[in-house]
Image (cartoon, rainbow, N blue to C red; front, side, top):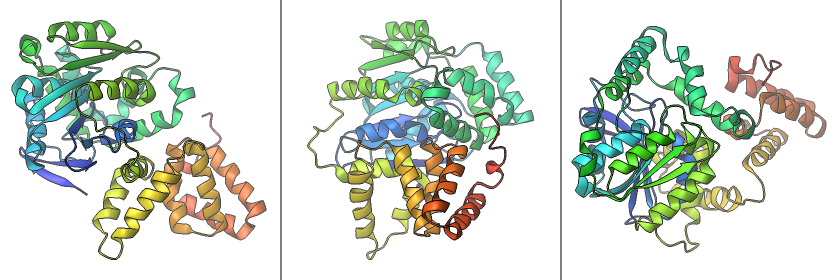
Length: 397
């Protein structure tokens, strides 16, 4: 697992893309992790160098405090210094967005452009953030997760992207309550209104029409305070619109980055990079990073081959969606009695939209065409992976 000691803490990061290409840094929102940018990483694969990281106190990054906006800004600079990145294009959402503003204000020579999503120059009232910090310290993140999902996603998300909402909820609950509380305190104190005129980097501001946290009017206000900033609205989305409406966001973001010299021209020679982005999005950053870290002279060419052919050529083919690919993969693993691969692909299948009821029906279907013994083993493997999660399947979705 790639970890770097910077600015008095240890940060998890993921760096991929062609050597020497322009670097785009993604900074996550409060309560999320680097995986929130999976769709953007896939869209940009092969055309730039992508640096994602877990904000301190989130995901796999260390929880250390106290935390202020200056702390989070210096974390990014520390990562860039450690990775020998002299300058980068910054993309941030919510907490990540005000972090990106801080970089543009205090480190203008390190920032080539800014894309600020669902964010503001200050997050009033401060008392509300301090109360939220107190709540999660006393009652845990589970006490606020439902309220957070209501702010992050529209009601329509339960129909058009239930798997992304479900995965985001799981990542929220996996974060450290103290780390979340420390970043709430950072937001309570953050206020860069008086310094926005110091931002000289080209700036794109994006806000969603259904966001109850950082509204369109707040986005327009932010854009008007930054010299020659451009504003773009996002429709049919709430606060976490990079996750809820990735196609819309990617179209705007790619056009912006291309305009500002962040992207290599598409030349069709980046099958490996596209495969790597797909592999990370399906199997997870941890698994893929572990696979490459454990590779040696014998297995490294194999990792290259499956990244290009399985994940670039095959999973990258748009003629089948990922839910169908996951369903097909699980079925074949049952029929071939491939326990390791079945278990590896089980949670990704749920992330790709397969429901527990559909999973049960799939395994019953396999009993007819692959045999009862094979299906019996598959039910056992499922229980071993999901445990108590497989209970309550007959409750309404």
